[in-house]
Amino acid sequence: MSTFGQQSATSDHVVPLPPDAGGVSSLNFSSQNHLCSSDWDGCVRYWDVAVAPPNMGGGQAQWRVQPKAEVKDEKPVLDTCFSPDGRYVFLGGCSKAVKMWDIASGTSTPTKVGEHSAPVKAVHFVQSSNLVVSGGWDGMLKFWDCRSPTPAGQFQLPERVYDMDLQGDVLVVALAGKKIAAFSTNGQPKQQMIMDSPLKYQSRCVSVFPDCSGFAVGSIEGRTAIHFFTQKAGIAENFAFRCHRQDNATKTESLVHAVNGIVFHPFGTFATVGGDGVVNFWDKDSKQRLKVFPPVQDCVTCGAFNPQGNVFAYAMSYDWGKGAQGYKGPQQQPNRIYLHYTPEEEIKQRAKKGGKR
Image (cartoon, one colour):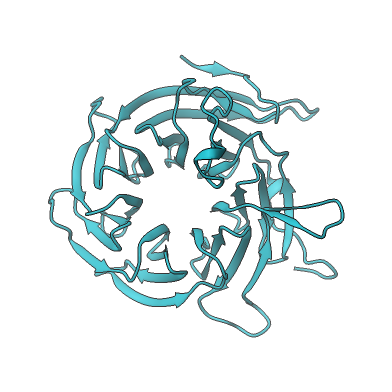
């Protein structure tokens, strides 16, 4: 059943979820504009998304969001990724297994690819080698050829994997213990470096720049750091900034929220989503905030741009930042996925303040 024109209080389109749906743990778009979500209830859901821009005179974007399929795993699913052709979804989570869902076949049961000895926190598809890479809370990074249950390669990391991102052949992994590791996946995977996080507190999320020149990392303390692999005088500089904090009226105290996700746009600008229920768009090169969304009623746990960059999906769910006592159940804290039409003027780079780009 398709849905047309359903709007939320934020004016962004709401993707319908069952009233008892679990918290949304990840969102990903395929190259064909299919949207995939994973949930803490073990569900992986898949939609076809199309949007018509607003009329020149104003108004709202027109949405067509068609649910296509879903599968249910026996335990919470923490991450998903698509194969380049969009036929397969790979998932990992608390079952400690990496699994493959063949969407085109119509199957309702994903196939096991391989396993870790602890939950799988992140999965990505390495296009140059047709391998799937998974990072787990067992401190292992494993590369899988889906035809074999034995890893094609693996690395023992110094700590648990909290998040990872892959752009081209550059893989960056955020670890417990405030460590960051970087790998090249070109040919035989190789570790390039391991470093301390540029932030003082635990890493929550990491994202590689589209041009692979560096990465952004977010922490539980409401800060994001921009880090370039190579420093070039007058061109690139590392820095950190506050992004998900709420100051009191006198600005003497701040309520700190975790940065739950960082997502780069094809333009090189990026979004952060946080425990304060806010989405921000940023330009790292001019060091400006491009847009701030009105807060939703709960945390924003994850987000994703579609390949064209004109749709930003984000999920409202409890992120457990206040522990079990902060959770009031799905009736008072419903889980929602929003779709935001993103015109170029909202997300394109801007000239630096006081000068030209």
